[in-house]
Length: 85
Image (cartoon, rainbow, N blue to C red):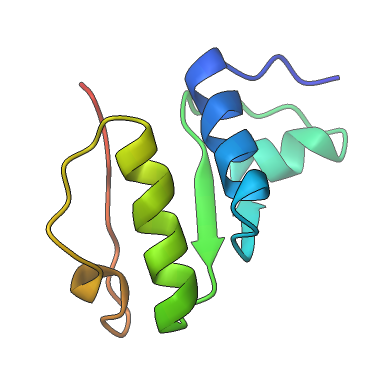
């Protein structure tokens, strides 16, 4: 079993509760399948539909992030890094 930090776990729980379409990718996904690789972060791939973007924004707002809308989540080939560092 992976030792997932509390804030990551809370975000994943919100994604699931809100029926967000997403995949966990990168080091955490590889570690889950038996090849531990610690990067200190977690990577997601989200369905880019407008409805799914609204759901992602809702989840982030529930965690306390202040977001002005969904347009940044709909841009083609755009990478969003969200960090509290």
